[in-house]
Length: 130
Image (cartoon, rainbow, N blue to C red):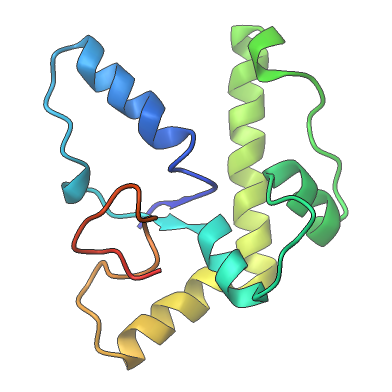
């Protein structure tokens, strides 16, 4: 299962635009992923000053995040930044065990496969459990 960070605000709209640009059907209800930001919010049960990957990575991993606005980056810098985001998301999950905990919680409650904190209410599907 893919693990993402804040996918409803970035990945999903971008993927939707790409699909529409090529006249492809976009069927979000067929997609399953784990949004680590949602899992972390639920696990922490408190508000952080910011839920941005930059802030969370600095706070939890004590690692500096790439500087600069995304819109000002070159294609090569965008590629490097995306790869860094994936690495930070993985390291946060490995350090805190959020996805494992949510998957275990889902299995203990006998949720169907895929019903593991994957979506927010603005993208309602049968998998909405958060």
